[in-house]
Image (cartoon, rainbow, N blue to C red; front, side, top):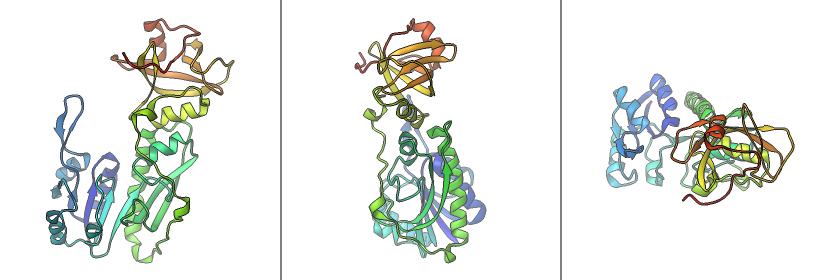
Amino acid sequence: MRIVFMGTPDFAVPTLRKLIKNYEVSLVITQPDRPQGRGRKIMPSPIKKFAVANNIEVYQPENINNDESLDKLREVNADFHIIVAYGQIVSKEVLNTPNIETINVHASLLPEYRGGAPIHRALIDGKSKTGVTTMIVKSKLDSGPILLQEEVLITEEMTTGSLHDILSEKGARLLIRTLDSYDEIVPKEQDHEKHTYAKLIESEDRLINWSKSSREVSDLIRGLNPWPLAHTFYNSKRLIIYDASLVEGSAGQPSEIVKINDQGIIVSTGEGNILVKTVKPQGKRKMSAVDFVHGYQINVGDTFNYGKVK
């Protein structure tokens, strides 16, 4: 069985790792090298790094749907195309190129959370479970028939980072199960009326709204950790908040600091309080909330506001 694998970020690496141990991966397609980090140095994708290290041919088209790419895929003559977080919309012509099918691994229990940020949105929305899905790829985004699914319970301690790692490994194992038993699986059409959309995180999504409940604020903070991170403002300077937990205690006005202790800063919300544990002031290093209190002379009664960065 010959496979073409299409993927780009870290999430896709466990799937490619499992594939090369079980099947013949003839070609890896990934996004072109892009500028990354503060220095904007041109860097290969995680998938390219892994493929090169394992002596697999890598192809990096700017447009997967152009004639050159189609000719390349026809030349490989693969049985399956596997897509995991590739980063380009794939045309019907590309989808129809493999001899058998094009299969996608998606980090949600479809039809819930179609789109580009299913892990972030599941946590931000306070879901108690999510999962991974293998499906047949169709032209409409994440709408194809479901092959297999596996649930994952979301615990209070999970962040997008930790859930990402769990789902990437489970997705890899689920894909191997899917390929191993493909002839026996009966694809199941999604209930399209129940679909939800996990839109990409935008800058305005990162700003903490302290008038929401402590649960909603906490879910936003962990849902944006480790990227792109939630923030508020203190004295009109941006303050990134990495982690927080729900705590009991007397409430104040939304965004008001109601208590400071040796664990951090207790902040009131629209309903309940949260304990802020780790922060990063604008232009400074990441630090504990206790160090922030000492270094910036934070006092009970101060507030986190919505001012703009000066």
